[in-house]
Image 1: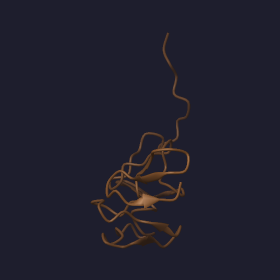
Image 2: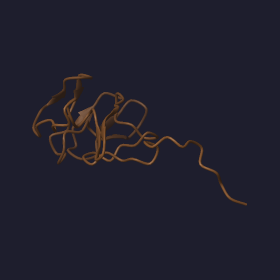
Image 3: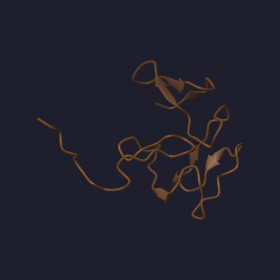
Image 4: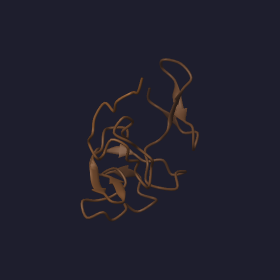
Length: 97
């Protein structure tokens, strides 16, 4: 028995070259493909495919705070310690749950 693909969309198996997001695991706040070759998402690249500057503190499109410890512009990587307490796994900043 063979498993058939759920979808034959060309973007189903893409991962962003900057942050690694996919259709199944989008960036926090959501994102879309700016380019498919190479795969670039809207959280990391502007509409022309130009990367956002590392060191930006807020994603302009979604108003999401970006992690200063990330190599590419990416939101904080939330790690939950409890239902009301979380922090960034990369930089250790305390975050709202």
